[in-house]
Image 1 (tube, one colour):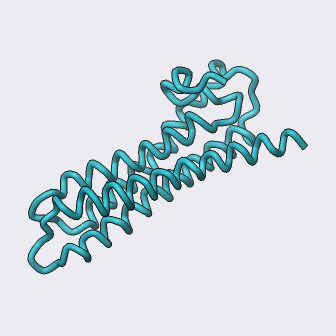
Image 2: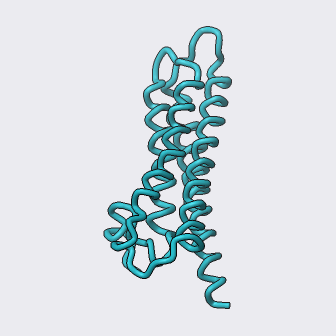
Length: 159
């Protein structure tokens, strides 16, 4: 029974990281506070339409990072059976899963209408949100055998 609570705790942690990044960063800080005052959309698009597009692609990116983090947890818990993460050679899989949020960043940049001013902030936020979501979720909530696989995780995860 204790083992099930361990897994549920990690899965809830992964979802919590994505939710915090979504609500605090994407919705409140970036969408409502920062970009709404700094972006000048193209002539045929209103600011509200542009921000809706930003929010949609931001959501797609965070969901892709969440999916990649959940896949990493499932792989680490059910597929990769090891006792020492250094001997596993699984960091390459971690980096391959990072491609999913990176692809979402590229899609967000391509499909968000070009703004007259301030679009670089949106693109920076796309990359920051999606990669940070994947990184923090995996660095904080990976299975115990893989808790130090994400680069730098040993510095932020000591339990």
